[in-house]
Amino acid sequence: MGGVPALRWDDPPEGPVIALLDQRCLPSEEVELVCTDVPALVDAVQSLAVRGAPLLGIAGAYGVALAAARGFDVEEAAVQLSGARPTAVNLAYGVARARDAHRAALRDGAGPQGAAQAALEAARRLHAEDAEASAQMAGHGLRLLQELLPGGGFRLLTHCNTGALVSGGEGTALGVIAAAHRARELRRLWVDETRPLLQGARLTAYEAARAGMPYTLLSDSAAGSLFSAGEVDAVLVGADRIAADGSVANKVGSYPLAVLARYHHVPFVVVAPTTTVDLSTPDGASIEVEQRPGHEVTELPGAAAGTPVAPLGTQAYNPAFDVTPPELLTAIVTENGVVSPVTGAGLAELCNRSRSG
Ligand code: MRU
Image (cartoon, rainbow, N blue to C red; front, top):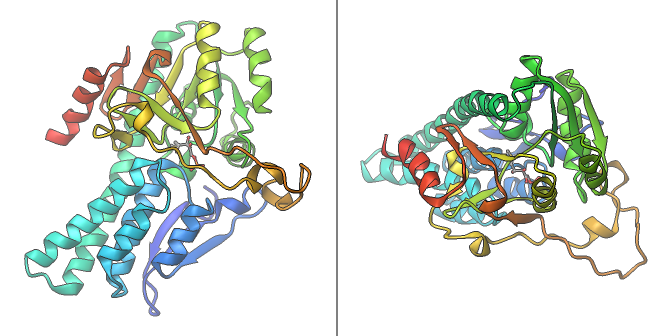
């Protein structure tokens, strides 16, 4: 990112803070949002100032560290943070990592300061691991694309935002796309605008422009005509939660793309770290999908927020995510490698590689 990192921990004399690049203000302004307590961070998560599965995990872990360092109730902070958004499992995972480090340090007699330090170290470790995972996914994902599309010159379609804005590194799907761009194999990046909150138009286009990628923005409803014109070689998206059977919850609008991709014989690839896989959620139907307020649909987002686009009193259906079943996926790319075809057994084997190691 330009001058403002997606998230940083700072420790000025007044006390520690979490400073976020406020994603609600992009692309017009790079504004830093400073959180001095957990309610401010919860608000930032719920209003999507900070968003995207891996970064939510990192923010959650630093949130626990913030509560500990400022002498708030860490257990209560962990409950508040975990529950801020329900679908991206990374959030609860990141919170649990820092909370468990805090608990363990207290149990070992570290005292409040030592326990706060342990929580902060856990958050920093998760942050660094995510950067490392992102680099590994980029390598595995690029190799997969080269195998699937041996002619090179990829025309890739993506949905939502999955780059450096949501990661300790270069991201998930957009990290793979950036690697393809560096390898001079990206002919065109098709960016879905991603209604209702325009993460594609506001954030992915912003990242693609900064990286000098050849990209074109389209309204979500234009994807079908793009496929039928033969202009898409593969679809790459991220994930918010992957169930044990390989079902993938991701930004609403991903499932229709997977259906389109299958109809047009185009690979549909999900890129996500193993921290997004939740083996305790058995299948897609068991994933809790966040329902968001109707005004996000009945009013314009971004700089024009609040401008109505529907008659006053219109009801809106606004799930933040949808679920794509494993049979529509060509592959899931993780930092540990690729599972293709996507099966529960293959996914568990990939996850267990890091969890046992
Ligand atoms: O509601 P958001 O903007 O947090 O949704 C984000 C997505 O759906 C991303 O595709 C997903 O978190 C993967 S990010 C690497």
